[in-house]
Length: 259
Image 1: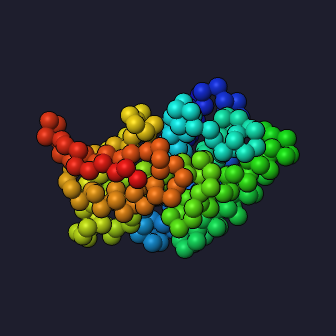
Image 2: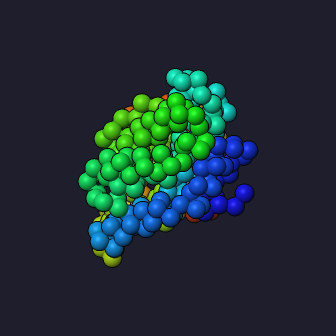
């Protein structure tokens, strides 16, 4: 199925319905645009719009599926007896709406994201769920949204996944730590050092996140952002991070984060 988020629904009819709503939702797509006007045009900050949420949603969904395959039970299933398919709906909805508050303000934008997301969830969920289940899904989505900010602690597997996925949008200058264009400092050099981010099946842990970088300055992004987001995410026991420097045969693993 083709959709603007490029979400692989894999037969999940509820997730397919969500993707269909998103494709035709002018309000949501315009809020993404507004978030970028504030972030990029007015603040000189990084992308918080449609490209960012597409990256986050796909990486969050991939991590959720990898954890489920390794035997980890999503919180909505463990606590409410709902399904893995519902957990997929939660992580995708939270991923695509976690930065809506950037259309309003940077500071505490996660709180404004919750308020804006509520109206959208009230339009989407009744078409997919009975009232009680819709309320549960909405609660889980809103928790994941507000928990994506570094200072807020996720209390569900799904929220922890969204928090970590948010930090993984760092390839080729798409840093989550902002830097001033044209200015050379640790922020800019580190951001531009990140060449590729991949999520692979792990060995001792279910997920391995590999960060390929052109020089050691990229460690600043990995340590100060990704490492900080993994700590306290609630899924730190399931992830290790490898930072790889150099090109071709000269590449070497310089640091492995076992958070």
